[in-house]
Image (cartoon, rainbow over all chains, first blue to last red; front, side):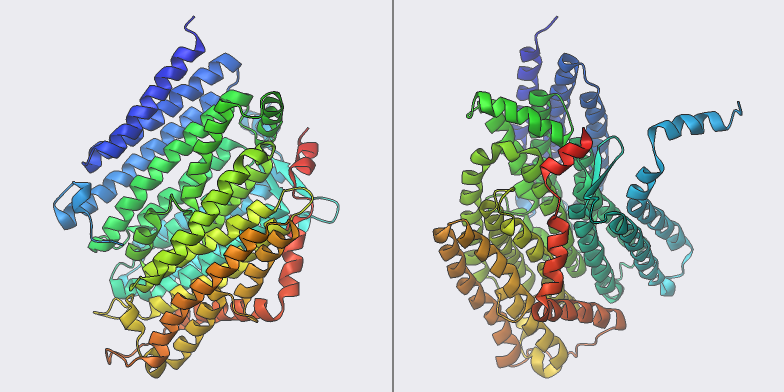
Length: 100
Length: 514
């Protein structure tokens, strides 16, 4: 059996690449995909813990995280389309009307 | 056996009748929200304001259901667990339920005319407000991280859409986008922290997590995994209450959102985030107190400094009030620092009282700004307040009352909010923090009076009259009565807060659950 730490390392790697993508990329869609990647890291951690601890709650949490991610994608893409319609750009640096 | 009843009996094994009573406030809101979505399709354009009425009726029914739970919580019953311990209906939750319903009702009243002016009068708006209240309720009464996470996301997703509801307006779009991206990012971090806590303790129940953490932390007080998980979860929570350094979304989202939604976000959404934060820090993570208090002291000081200093230079009233609401979060965080959760609860009572007071005074201030929205005039600039006293003396005087209350001038409600926070700091010997907080209260007075100065001393810039609508007048009246009433008769409300705190501690609930 693959030890727990491997799963956790992979999950941490997925999460960290999500965070890195969120901070580095400038395209709104890519940023959004990075957030999904973070949530996948979370899911993997939950599944790994649930298997090791023989508890179902972690698996249930994963289903809900997937539902939330889907809902977030639906709402997010709708908002992105609305932004694109008023500005014709998907670069976050050019969405800058509200300032300090 | 009858074929039809078999699945029903199987179902009733898992859910008791009392579970339905606990979920009734949320079920009713769901029914009314779906009802609005369907009725909206049949309404002609000029009847769209009926949606607001439906929403208000729904909130009223929900309040009645909350009152039912309220009456079940007698002197000897301090909490009712339900749904296998994933929900705990205690007085703490009931108190927050009332706050959410009042905040949502006033926001609905503020929206009626505003949406007509913006020509975005759709039923989805009111349905989304109700959906977000359902999420808030799940956050306040949840006792399981799954429940709390779903509640948080339901509230957040509804609010993202509401912020971007003026879809033809560039500012509204941009605000929604920034709120969505940063909100989803913080939820991701929050969920990662939750996964680590689940891994550490093997349970999603807050009570069991607390017990597991107690064992873990007594073996090694500086367990790096626990610290990392706590940091991740706190980041998510502090983001939601808009504490510095996780506050960047707040001024943008508040400025771009429709003004009624800005008001709704600054009170109801914020109270819900506080309910979640208090639930997690006082019930789930109380064994980690020694770890999180130093962190909270840093965050509270940064929040007070960042909020107050940034507010001074603002020229947009919505943005100014956004920074002021960040500063108010700083005061409330001081209450959490002062209270140790068991022997001294003045700080927690202070936070809950502060949230009640804040609901009325901040919604009132946003209601006045929303009433300045006219055709061709957005009304959210400091110059738009100029000469308001000459044009609309009632609105100007009410605004002055709300601003003075926000600044904490006695005998208005805001004074008592700050008073209990400062009292709790002095009681627990945090004299330096109390001193700094008082100092920042003086800074706050400066920018609130700057707005008052514009209303009373400056000449008006446009001749466009300010016309109030009946629903807006009602919203203003509720806020004014709340702000002045709590200031004049604080005892009634202090009793309410005392009631909501009695028996609401982790030990009692743990006893009931096992």
